[in-house]
Length: 370
Image (cartoon, rainbow, N blue to C red; front, side, top):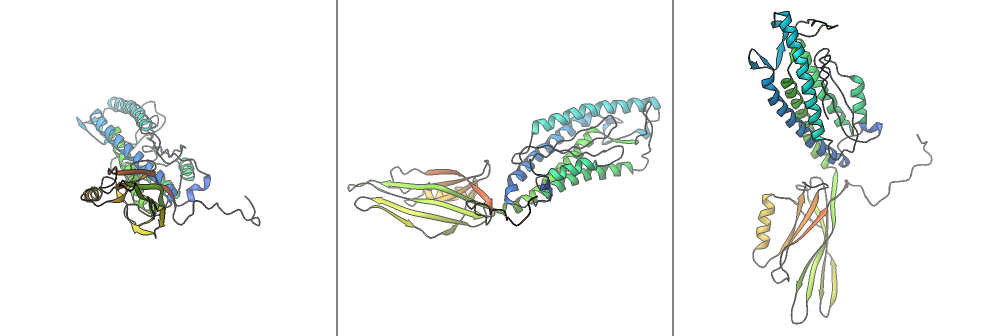
């Protein structure tokens, strides 16, 4: 998402660019689905960067527009009695907003597109000076092309914040319309400064961040996360020959991977002299997966590392894309070697209750197409 400022008519337009390639019906789809998790995360990260960028712009522009020698959120042209001074100040503000708009565009380019949303760009704009009107056509297009309904709704809420604050400024006591020299129209007497516009943008983005942060766990709760392909091993040499043992491990969980209960399935196996390979299909059992870098991970690692005992634990790493499962296997002291085994596997994620191996049902030949 990125804003633009139409300083020719002093309509600071907040543009919203969301980046998802989706069919037109997507705006009615519920965001509380597993498939939208990565996009929601990507939008939170992107909007957090945009808010921080606007914070920096506000700090930069505060000392560049002063009223009576002090930074101000607004300029009240009604208080400038000399017509020439008023016109010069107004045209100076236009120049400043042009420079500010270029910096906004630079910020949007630096932040880039949100990860996990695909690649499309839509915009919605609001005149935050003259009319306080939201561009209904661009907003409708943005909401239609949004990845899902709640994200489209946030676009409207973002614009509504600008509209409402613009209306409040226009209704301020003493905000009288006036006509700059050589202008074909009257303009409001109270004008927002670039620094104040930057703070307003940061506030709008943080409103979206709060809503998306609340939405994320609801979407995550719809995800079944699983992993496969882990085989632990331990080789114990002896005069009679080497005995090798271990487990094939897979697991799955529906919901938050660090708080919900995991169903683990293991196949224990042993290969020994004179008996060959024996495998035992263990019954599924409930366990957990701890967050990478958490205190409980460190506590368990210390516990498993002490004495002759051993064991393995599941660690969930959400810092990667896609997230990964780390199985940390602490071998028995007699194992050769007896150092920790570490397995890193990308998670398999799909909607809870959905069988990813099962193909979708064929279309009903009795139903019309289109």
